[in-house]
Image (cartoon, rainbow, N blue to C red; front, side, top):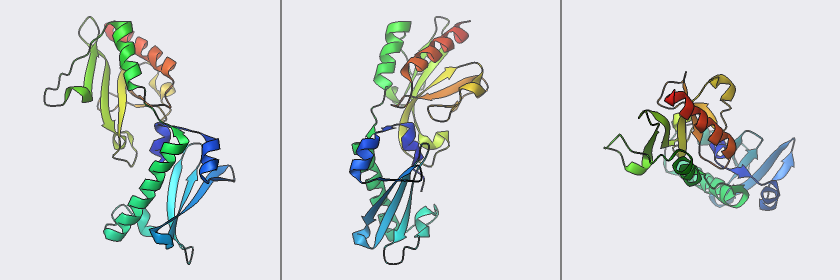
Length: 216
C-alpha cells in the first residue's frame, strides 16, 4: 500500500528513522514490524520519493495480497490495515517534521497584501475555503482544505493548500509541493501545498506573481 502522500506533508529525519528501527538496504530504508499478534509482519520501505508497506505471513513469508486490494473488505483485512496505519502514524509522529505552514502563510497574505479574505461559498464553513482578492476584486489566492485524493494520491487525509495563478506552469509542477490546479483551470493555475515540505520563500514569490497576473 502506498503512503507516499506523507512525503508531501512531512520532512524525514534519517537519524530518528534509524533509531526507530529502520535499516539501510540498497539505497532505501527498510523496517519490519510485527502485527496481528505476531502472525503477520509489515515491511515498510522508504525511498527518496515513496513510502510503501506490504504485509507478510510470519510463518511462511508469503505476501498477504488482500492488504493491497482496494476492493477487499472484511473485519480481518480491516484490522490489518488499521494496525499498519497506526505504525505509519507512529513513524510520522516520531521521525518526521510535519508542522504545516498554513497560519504562517495567511499571516503573510494579511501583512504583505493587506488582504483579509472572504468565503464566497456560504454553504461551506468559513475556515475551509478562503479567497484573497486584488483591488480589482478578482482572486489571486484561494486557501483551501482538500484531500490528498484530489491530487491523485490514494488517501482521504485532508491537507491545506492554495491555488495561485501562474505562468510556465509545466516548469513549476514537481508533484511534491506544486501540482496542477485542483478545481480550477490547469492552464493558468497551480495548487501549492501548505506543508513542511514547501519552500516558503518560493511560495511567497509565486503568490506575488499571482497577484501581479490577476491585477494586470
